[in-house]
Image 1: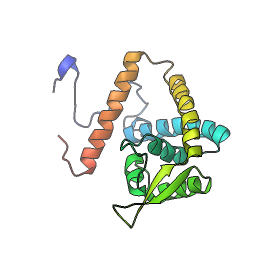
Image 2: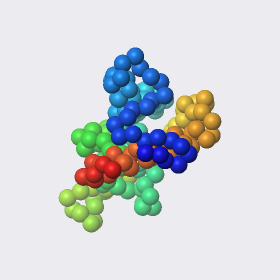
Image 3: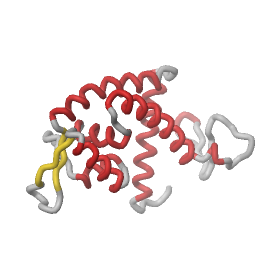
Length: 176
């Protein structure tokens, strides 16, 4: 089937740009490639955060989401954190417990739902968040150093589309 720009789309076809010695090898499998790339980037970032702030990557993700909470209050339930990070609820719970013990987040009663609590960054948590963001942006710049601006934009667009598509299919959507 022909698409705009003369590109081809074939059902089940895998085109990676870097052919392997045998078709269908694990190295060509998209979920594997995404996982390996994610692990490599996460490991790099985790090491930098651990050295400077004593934070593990899951703890930083919770802090980042709380710091960027769009509701204006910076307060979210643990369920909302789990949904926003796509992390396992046990991992979110563990990270929240560590952050609370360190005084970086605080729990407050949830007036809308007495069964849950709202989590927010403390003053110390916000101070670390303000310090980590420049480090995160510098790391991102290093990772994208060999990409053109157009490649960076296309990469982000394609990742967004892949997340959207996976979410659609995960909710019971049908493949085209």
